[in-house]
Image (cartoon, rainbow over all chains, first blue to last red; front, side, top):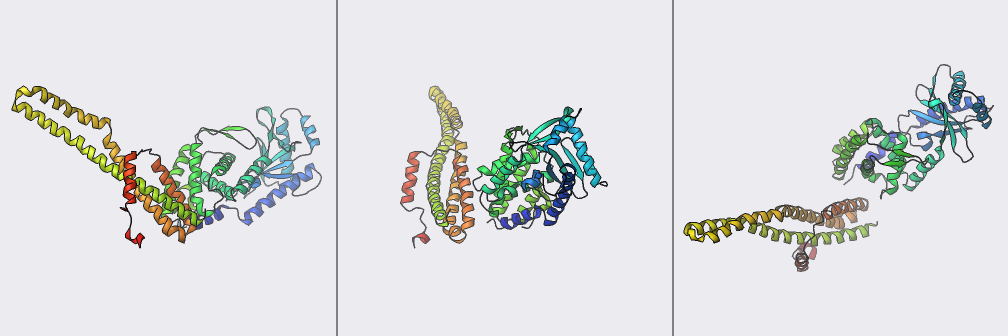
Length: 293
Length: 163
């Protein structure tokens, strides 16, 4: 019984974690960007200072292949006063300024300002820079260029801390679950934002009775996670920065399909029908998961 | 959960499933008997009603009474949902019987040999058991007592276990 689970999910989790090469590539690119901005705003070219990885790289929940790195770049407070003195859409002008600095270092690279971020489109990776001002309570002010421009308060540390706590409490299973769900989201085109999926995964694992178990229980973890997601349709979710988000149900039918497949795959795993189980898992996760364990 | 307690818990559940499945089978037998009564009685009464009338048309009162009862009994059977209950009891009885064996195998075979698998198997079987319990079928007390007596008499003991 369940002879294929440990090796199948062990390999799967390894397959979707970023390789050292990909991590190094992301790190190099972000260091280049940070160094440029430090030179422009802080007068030195440190590759790490004033930078905070947020999003999946900050939470270490990135799944292969890497798509983008989100990074907060802290600007000096003096610049806040300067920007506030500008006329027109201040936030848009700030993004434009950051974009122009980056363009000097990367003249061949496509760089765009969009909403809250400056996107640096490298060949292998997209680096999204969010210029920000640190507040005294540890939160950050980020730009929003829409509707004439405004500031938005973001709390990426709370998000990261919530994932870190959930992962510690679940013996390292939360991050694996999040990566698996992200692969499902991508493979099945599930219309759900990654940070919502992460929060749902965190809430699910906090109440899952086998959360500290090892890979041997991963088939049930995935099945029960889908059950949980289905039960959350049309509910409200409190995200780590304290805001309430309506989940809606656009994603429900794909989740129900995945749930049905996972239930079937679990039954095959129990009966050691390893290939049959693999076929069902592949309908959820694509070729990232092995058919033959 | 330690493998020893898994084995003990599985044995406990196996015993519990044995009592429940035995009671359900006794109840099933009883329900089948009643079902037969409800099927055959209107046939006999219908025939008797016809005979009475053809023998002597003066017997119209008795004949009509029997004819009325003939129509009433199947309606009563439907109202009591006896056929549905029969199916439910039958499927639950076999489910509990299967669970009884599965828990016993878990306790005797899987738990001592593969504790890790045993832990999952116990959870799986408990889920199945809870699903069976969710039907909310209430076995009559006298039926359960009868089942207890049967089990205590050793009707379900295996000679291999007594060696």
